[in-house]
Length: 102
Image 1 (cartoon, rainbow, N blue to C red):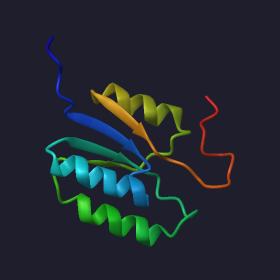
Image 2 (cartoon, one colour):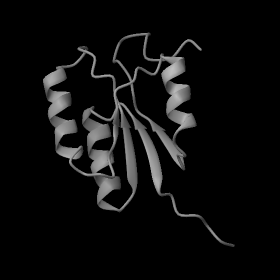
Image 3 (cartoon, one colour):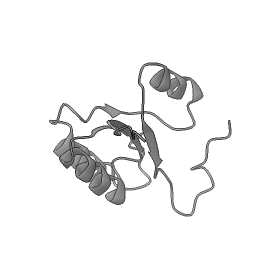
Image 4 (spheres, helix red, strand yellow):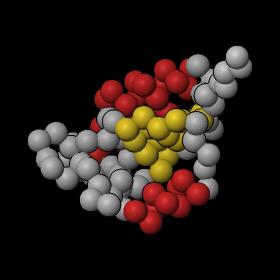
C-alpha cells in the first residue's frame, strides 16, 4: 500500500505558544505550513507577532491574517490552497467566541 506524504498543512492559531512550536517542528521536517492567526488582542499581539516574525522569513511559512469566523476569507483561503491536513489549535481561553457560527 502506498501512503502519500503530507506536504502542506494549515495550522490555525499559528502565533500561539503551542501552535508556534508545532509549526516550527513541521517546517524543520520540510513541510510547508500556512499559519493562520488574526492577531487579535486577547493575548499580547506583540508576543504573537514576534513568534510569527521568527517563522515568516521561511518561504515555506506563509501567514494568513484571517479570523476563523470570516467565512468568505476562509473560503478564499481554501479555494487558493490545497492543504493535505488542517491542525485547528485556534482558541480563546474562557471565551465562547472561538468556534465559528457558520
